[in-house]
Length: 308
Image (cartoon, rainbow, N blue to C red):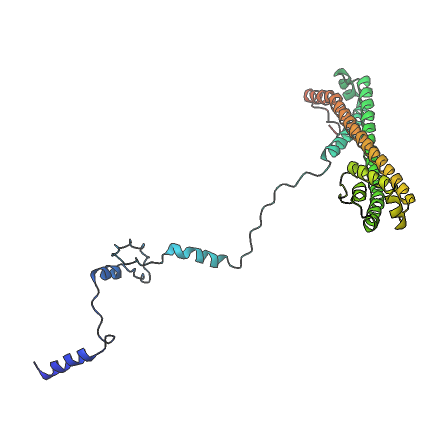
């Protein structure tokens, strides 16, 4: 063996492990390296990603980035800065008091139709008379129309009266509540006995119901004007005269409660009368519409009257 070969072998043995040439890859590594996708050349179409190679025991399969993985990023980059799409709005909600508005429009239309029939030309009026639209029928229709207008006006008046009753009830309740809370606050500073606390209802909250409030306030104020609470409250500036005045306010509140109930009943009755009258008017005007359509169908030479 020549001197150069011996020197080269000694240098290889003395070199560190990091400087030694890498070992040849094993068979599974060769398979994994061969499965790596190659970048497509310019002008050539990208081939679909190859199937995953067989995985060697104890090794994880490499993860390859495909075009489908990058699609969301491309879409998001294209839509950045674009205005958001406007959502379609649904149908608008129906206006309040739709039934009342429809009824008033119907009554106004019937009123104008009667005027149009009475102002029709003689030839058309004669044909209407032959079809049963007689003066007696028109007079009965006008009477029903007047009755319907009266019920509509009565319904409006009943609503106004009910609103006044509600306002009066709220005012009476505010006054009575102030009187009751004044007595309760004064009583809590001077009354110490448990029986007095129970008689004045000092441990109970103020009811939200009008009826329960009247019962509790009346019972508490009656106990406040009797001994031993009367003398204790009088010494704390709440004299029996204040209790009597508060009881009168409770009576006024009770009367306002009944007045509001009566107004509500009257308003409901007026509502029923109005609806019943409008239904009757619809029934009575129906033959006029039917006869007018039949007449115009057989006599197309006439112009359709206004509001028909």
